[in-house]
Length: 537
Image 1 (cartoon, rainbow, N blue to C red):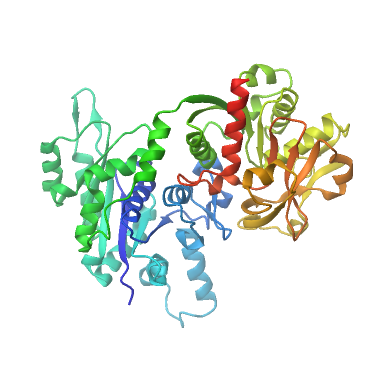
Image 2 (cartoon, rainbow, N blue to C red):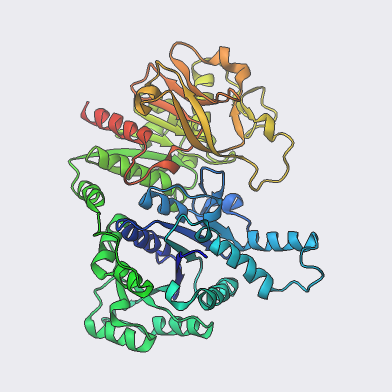
């Protein structure tokens, strides 16, 4: 039997309180004491995964090495812990029901009536314990999406109740993240919403062991005593989570509050050694005391919602910190860009990223932006669709292929320099069918990329259906515009580079997914360095 301990993180009162950041912060504190920790996210929606969700609905879709399209919280887990996640780290209600229904169709339930209890809860239980039973982890942290009281969350809450009963109270900790709102008119913090939230949790048969209270103002001792009394927790287990300037401060705030101490005490575990957070503190010090500033334009079609490009924004923070540089991101909606206003919107920037995306909306704006930065020698990084747009821009404006386009934007285009991948042509289902996960890439030995990566063979994560059409290689690539990286198996073009330009790189993959606090991605680090040079010139 596994000795793994389980932490369950639930939410109450309001959504978007930061369960993922609290879970990642706790994991970081436990990891810093030499415990082996992983985090998993259980989402209550019926989509099988976030792959088909609009970024406006759910933020970005994060992709793991093994090709899972997951919730963006897994990005936080990886950035904090510097440990890759996998398909097992994110489960949705859709996936749970799909699995149970497939088993029923195969006759695995031997004629039993299939019900939420026990069949759905058993499936959730199996998946909640999957990582713990591997024997690789001392502690598994499970974040339950949504808020307590949501009808969608009920099967998960019931499963947690069953697991606590089966595993033993000493092997489980329930952390309830809640909101303590401040009423400006009364000039006081109110605990009643939290009391009701904890009561709702208790009605489901679960007692909160720890309260993490999201607040804009310091909690007084009297208020902590009141919460402890009314919510049936120890006063030391009332943890304040006050608003901070950056999410990277949260682990140190949780350390001050003793969150990990309370959890280990409940588990009857002693720290393996004192906290070692020296690297984290160094990173935070650099982040908070930059010596330089650069302005980076982020051109995309979902810029109204920051979570749509969360991994890119965090990768820029990591890269900036490496160079003691604050990165000021200027969001530019691609639909608002055109040739006539490109200079007005892009002038004064030290670098431009053209972001990933799908569909025709905003495409011409992205092409206009790329033309401007190419002609004005502004550092450029094109990611996935951004790389494809850089190919189209060069084909149209330098090579004279005025009809150049992508099959994605115009199925009947005369010059399809970007085409649907051969393996995608007979696919009709949209979910989980793109080219996903980590793929190998060989780099040209004389390219800028070999110098950046300090290697001529890399592996990066992908999420796309369309690719550079190799039939146009001879027409497009020349002494200035080169293929700098390719997949050794399929010969798919992975990286393009304009060597005539000070720093102009387009990549078919998503480098932002692999950037972490302890290992800023080399491509983003090199891009920020180029922006810094541009700023000084």
